[in-house]
Image (cartoon, rainbow, N blue to C red; front, side):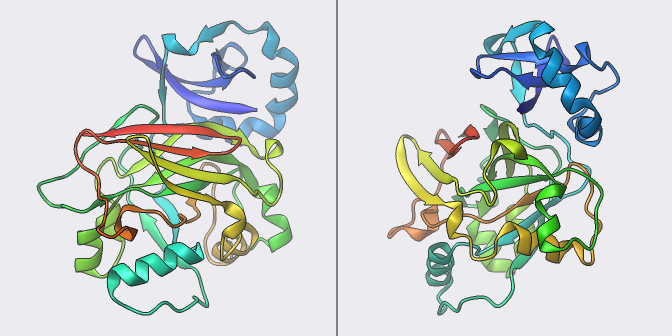
Length: 290
């Protein structure tokens, strides 16, 4: 099943995407108490059967009549992120930073400041007053489905609600100057998500999904989540040993090679550029730099 957040006549609400991806059903027709995606995630185990049985009774709304927002517009917590989690991307990052590549013994975890996530067809501020090296990163975003801690690796998939497409927008010059990720990846508009969340039962476990990024129609990134250095059970289990994860928490799992800084010369983003991040079985996240 696919769930989204959409705006219609100025009202934000949670929706169910039709099987052909052409319409949306307002979840409030089934449960008027659910106003946010996090509320659906928490109640989903008890609502799942009812949604499946009654979805055909709901009123379909053509997608062109609504504005799709990021599935979780204002996350309760900053996003959890993992850096350098595809080998070839780790190599291009080391080259850009002028250092030798060494396979990591541990994941590189960091948090991504989020004021409000940018949704499909939304715009991303170039912040050209403070950065000249704006970059893109397609990532599989994992949505946690329940409050949990100290998970064993074999328990991880049961704690996942679903998946969406993420773009971990990054200012490489800021990132390099400060020697850490928080500032260069945490500017306003630097967290894009969408177009919707696909529930975990729709995706193979472990997920082996193709990821691609197009910039102005040019294919830049083309890989598969099978190439992750640290997989989902490893990362989520490890994080949960000391952090309580909650329904609606978001984990960005890393990006493959092909980011702008990896080209010679680099191909950074400019105002007017269109970025399409695409993940097999989920959909496309399309954004424009302004």
